[in-house]
View 1: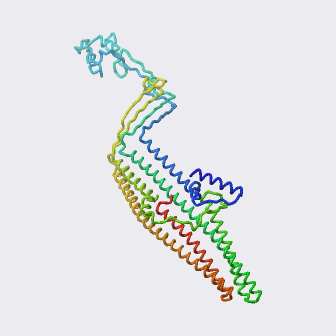
View 2 (view 1 turned 180 degrees about the vertical axis):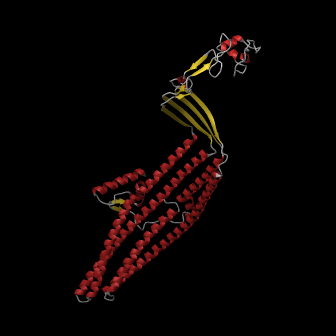
View 3 (view 1 turned 120 degrees about the vertical axis):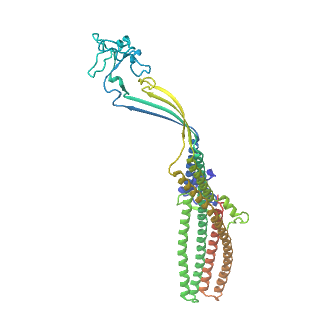
Amino acid sequence: MKIKATFTALLVLAFSFQGLGQIKLSLEECRVMALENNHQVQIADEHVGAAEALRKSAKTNFLPNISANGSYTRTNKKFSLLEEDLFIPVVPYSALDASGSGLNSSLLSPTLADGTTANPQFDASVFSQTFAVDPSTGTPYVDADNNPVFGNYAWIPQEEGELGHKNIYVGALTLTQPVYLGGKVREAYKITKYGEQLAAASKEADVADVLYKTEEAYWRVLSLGEKVSLVNAYIDLLQRLNLDLENLFAEGIIIQNDLLKAGVKLNEARLNLIKAENGLALSKMALCQILGLPLETDLSLTDDLSSELPGMESLSYRDSAVANRPELHALEQTANIARSGVKLMQSRYLPNVGFTANYLVANPNPYAGLTEDFGSDWTVGVAVNIPIFHWGDKNHTLRAAKYEQRVAELKLEETRDLITLEVQQALFKVKESARKVEVARQNLEKADENLKVATDGFAEGILKTTDVLEAQALWKESRSSYIDAKMERNLDRVNLEKVAGDLK
């Protein structure tokens, strides 16, 4: 169908630009071209494509998320752990107590003033290895604060306590896999699926709307074409009558007033012809716009207003509407989205569990004394988040989602009832328009007979000129009503197909 429509469009464009004559199109060809070229349908296709892409995007949330991160930092100053250079006493292990937190008691108060030992546990060798001892007194040297001076000290320069490098590189490869999120991922995916079906239903509605507009424009062109032919036929009648009246006036049989009346009617008919031709041209331009053709394309339509239409008894239009109307499909998906929204709010009460794995690279190397090379490591872990309390926030959002679900369900029920009523109204209009066609046809037969009688009576001198003019006007009016009735019947029939969901 797409190839056929494209070929037809190219053919029409070729004829339109080269001026090779009219392009003949049937109703079915117009329907195909409208669906191929109409902007409304093309926009609907784009919406469907976007919804499909969102569904595929949501599906990826079931799979692990792998990401790579890196950073580079250049620092100005290093961190310093020391305020100044440190001198730390160095003591033998034997000088420490059992806990290792202080000096052994054997080093305390080693001698008295008279030189005798006050501490029976005193160890002179350990004492001499620990403190700087005055050989003349046998006591440790003391500093300005009267603290003993140790025999050995370790010197730690301030710069040895500096940390950091000018250039810092960090990289990580991370894998995150959701294990259980309370159903969030599943419901989010369902929402995108319903959204895709909603877009498809909206496209069906747009297609039905375009097809209805196409048929409406098609039948209107045919109707105005018949009316142009009707006005031309009416002008022929008036011209023949004017010719007869001129002959009768020349012979003195009628007065000039009769001739003037017929002339006024003829001029009115010619003005109506201009209006009808302009209306036909505008209707053709409107049809070209729907078909996506240049507005100046000269169309010739092959169907006829009197074409036979299928019977109504073969379909249950109400059941068809409930099953096929895209508006109901769209509202059903809206209700499904609302139900998933409720489940999504309920999932906020449940814990979230996720698995993570990381591979890290850093320079300076934190695993080798912060040397200027790259070091690496890997980690794995499980993260759990359990919601406990947040002042009723989850409860309020859950109630709001339930209200929205109820609204969607009520709209669906209301639309079902309205569509049933709409189908019934459309059925009544189809039956009424069919009856109008029959009545208009009968009136047309009577108008034909009335015109024949009036024309014959005028020729025999029984009837006046005004009687013939009235009969001709009635003949024109009855034919115009018959054309309108046929067009209304066709439009009512396509409207019935639309409301029943069968216009595809």
